[in-house]
Image 1 (cartoon, helix red, strand yellow):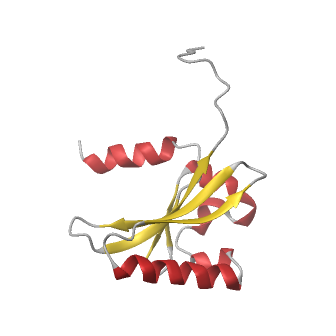
Image 2 (tube, rainbow, N blue to C red; image 1 turned 120 degrees about the horizontal axis):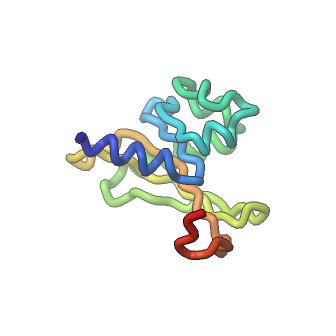
Length: 124
């Protein structure tokens, strides 16, 4: 089985939104959590559209600046973008690179800081 099937499954099972963009700033993939989160804005129908339609002018400027920074060095791969206190999460932009280290796109990573409330290994 091709490794990409496993990677897609990892992203699809993530409870955090994952929206992947190419270097033309087009949304190329949204996991189910992202499609649900952005449902009022079009959900999965946003795939194929430019990310700039979902953000204000200042945010669009910052997205372009981050992508330029990613392109400066193969070691520029993660940058903190903001804290969302209401949802208790930190948000980052992450560079996506091919096997040679060439930048091919980016995504926004949400890291929730809530303590897990479920019981360990609860199977029901």
